[in-house]
Image (cartoon, rainbow, N blue to C red; front, side, top):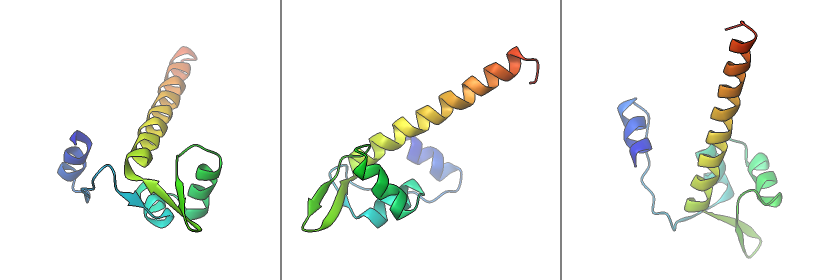
Length: 92
C-alpha cells in the first residue's frame, strides 16, 4: 500500500486489485512492464507460479507482486554492489 501511495504522490497511475485476483498473461506482462513472450518465459521457467484454465495461463496478482518485489530487490542490490565497487576503485 505504501508503494501505491508513493507512486500516486509521484503522479503515476495506481490500480487497486485484490490479492486473489487472477490475471491474463497480457495483464500480468503489462503490470511488470515486460513483453508477453518474456512473461511466458518466466512462467515456463517456474519463476512465477501460474495455472492453466483450459489452454490459457492465469497468474495470481499476489504471486506476480511477490515476483516483482523479489526482482526489484535484486536490481537494487546489483546497483548497490556496483556503487560499492565504483567507490572501492575511486571511480565514484
